[in-house]
Image 1 (cartoon, helix red, strand yellow):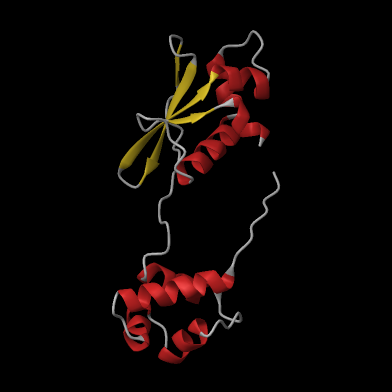
Image 2 (cartoon, rainbow, N blue to C red):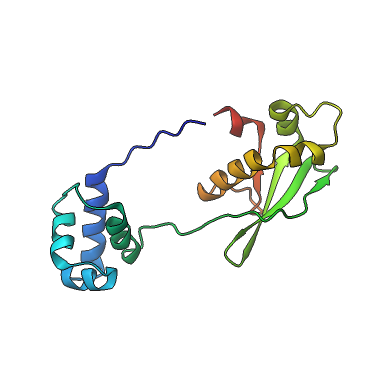
Length: 157
């Protein structure tokens, strides 16, 4: 799978400056909270692009600009719900359990379910399925009840 990311550095810097001012933080205070020097904050806010990513992340974290959610999977037991035609599995975001599922249709269309049991196909392709569930979770693409549902079209994008 190929990833294409574009970062609008100037927009990030502007947003950081706006948040710092809105939170009534001086550059010195932001530097203290982020554990970096005031001159580094000044260089960052002037749009200098030769700033280490770790330094920028420290600034973004203090200003609330970093999404720190992390969906992990610990080989939880999956189950097949024949009434809903989905395989259910669970992820963890810190202390929060996150219910995930993949449709039988996605298992058929993308993983070639044929006459095998859905759980067998799920387990054989678990890593790819969990990757897609994680992507949807972090993009806030949840069903009404909070379920992360992986569908055929999620693999076609």
